[in-house]
Amino acid sequence: MRPPLRVIALFRLLGKRPPTRYEDWLRDDLAGFLYAVRELAWRSPVLLPLVVAVGWFWHGPLILSVLWLVTFLVVDAERDRRRRRRVYFGAQRDEVGHFQSYRGLDTEPQR
Image (cartoon, rainbow, N blue to C red; front, side, top):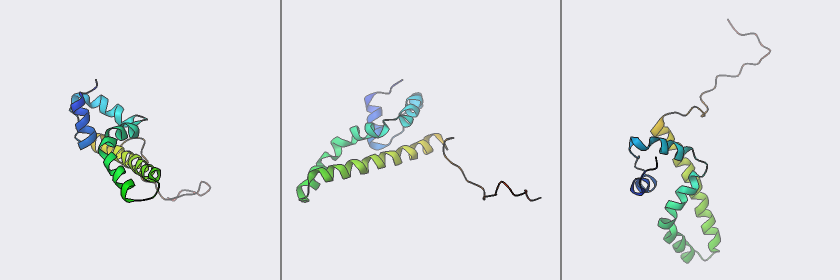
C-alpha cells in the first residue's frame, strides 16, 4: 500500500521513517531501480536556486554546474539508500561480509 503524499514528503525531504504499515512500500522503494531518480525529483525544486546561484557567480558554463550537482546528488542518493537500508532493516544478505585469510587450494589444511 502506497503512503499518502505527506508521509512520502517527510521520508524524502527530512528522512523520517514511514509508519510500519507502509513497510512493504519502504522495502520496495529502497530496493527499486530508480531510487536515485525519485530522490532527485523530490530534491530538485529545493536545489534549483543553488544551481542558479552557482551559475550566476561562476562565469563558466552553466551546464557544468548542473552536471556536477546531478552527479553529486546521484552519489548522495545511493549512499543515503544504503544507509537507510542498513538502519531500517539491518544488514542485507547481498552485502559482502568479512573474508578469511587466503589459503591456497593445493596446500593441506593445518591440524
